[in-house]
Image (cartoon, one colour):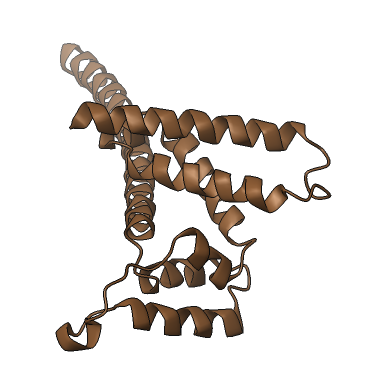
Length: 192
């Protein structure tokens, strides 16, 4: 099972990278009629790639994955909520009221509400929309967001810890030097 997950992650990553290179090398992408089609392919391949990443991948290449995640989010912000719902349709579960959970009808209502107000280039509104859309791939993509936050925090804590260790070592060296000097002074006083 793990091997299939790794292979899928690698395939989607290669496709994502190829599409991103195509966009960066094509200076006329905004005037191109197919730019939204390319953006959809980047979004889908990026989301699928991020879903299949392992924890080891996050640890080994956090900055790259974080930058790619931000790129995908910026691509999402180019689309309206209805367009995102056509790319990642809501799950067709219809008994939400009976079990007091989000269902297809709830998702359709939320699509209409978000369409009225839009995202206003605010990723937090986009994340809220993902939870309301009831699409499993987008929910897993939000898990990626949480993992990136975790690894970011962990990364920052590691940097802070290393700085604290360096400060402690420096103080320890200074303390040893002071004690060594005072010991030498005391010995010289005793000898006199």
